[in-house]
Image (cartoon, rainbow, N blue to C red):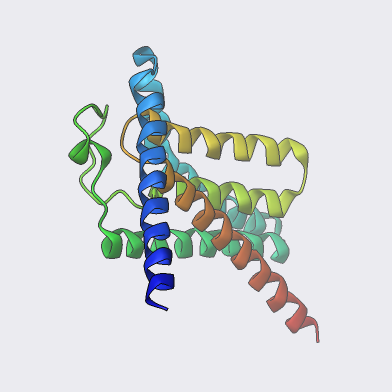
Length: 197
């Protein structure tokens, strides 16, 4: 039995080390081979993430108020709830895991912007994927879904490009954001059905 547990522990440790190596290798390839002329563009894209993410649910809710459309109002509230839950989850994980930023551990990473909070997960990616998922679930049209996820994916890439996150930070942020928006959407639908009965 002891041999079994030692084997499992060895496997988990070696898997963790190889995943960490893959994580930094991907980041190094993206960050060190970047076109530095695009640094200001990616910085602006990153900085605009939170205002855009907040504007979407507020805008949907506002249009619902103007048109007196209760369904749009509920969708705006659901999108806002998904964003709040995803960012709250991200914030708690940052505090609990407290992963240092890549530049703190690897001297070959020279971030274009300095961020002092913890690295895992990426809050910008969380917000972007929450917003993209909410829009996609609401509209369900390719001309909304494709640009929404293209924007969210570009935000995620910008975090690697600028050298402030590991790929695993970005992946976790995308999952948290999309998952929170989806759960919020489902709860909203469930509440609507419950009100009809």
